Image 1 (cartoon, rainbow, N blue to C red):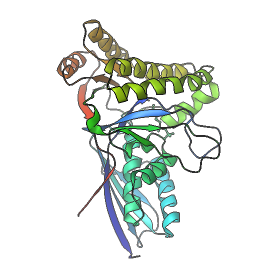
Image 2: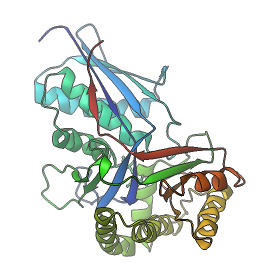
Image 3: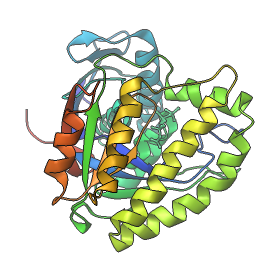
Length: 330
Ligand code: DP6
């Protein structure tokens, strides 16, 4: 192998319609519940990985600045797996850029680790099909497994003895022109990471076992609604998945509360839109932003209503997009 090998990849965040929240207790970063997401066009991560014999340690630049130690440690963990598979000890310089707010509940870790997994494998000439990229990304961040795929992707719950676990495609991006309007409520990073929030929920919330038991039923309803392109069925079940996930976290001791007043206001906007016959259902990840599911026909009305909502700073309009991909050329 030469002294320097470089590859680049892009990946897009995904929004879970059926939420993942909680890990199996037997290690290997296996999810306790099945999840299903839509990978979004309109926001993207671009990552370059340079394995270089001149480097003494891995480095990570995020949006042009050195990354915090925790982010570098997670990236190095992924790189260690790739090095072990390729039989090399070369260290890597990683540079990753997002065109959307990082670590504020906009699923930046999903697109980050999917892009890193693909670029690192490509740089070491390892196979780069979506399934191996998904499994590798999942070991670092479960939601990242789904961003390996475009369109709609599902990840089953882990079971004891799982050696590998990759997401699976449910439907391609052009299956359904669903619109997802992101109501951005802060530009700041979140206080409690998903990893910590879900572990604390599992450890202390009396509602966590109920969440784990109930989630597979909602997952099945969400999968059927996506396959049928049925927005109302999807919206009802996706909103329930988000609210039950957050209910389990809010019931932890001490409570894990990701919502701000603007989160509540944006959810109320979606309810008010529905009351006037506009198809709009909300979902919320581990942060204060609200993502509203709607149709192409109702998109403008939803955007206007969200922009007029107190505490909503701006909106991003997204739709189903592509999976992780290599960027060829210099
Ligand atoms: C609320 O995938 O970030 O966005 O596996 O510990 O890295 P780790 O957690 P992460 O959790 C995402 C949680 C969520 C719901 C979801 O994306 O399914």
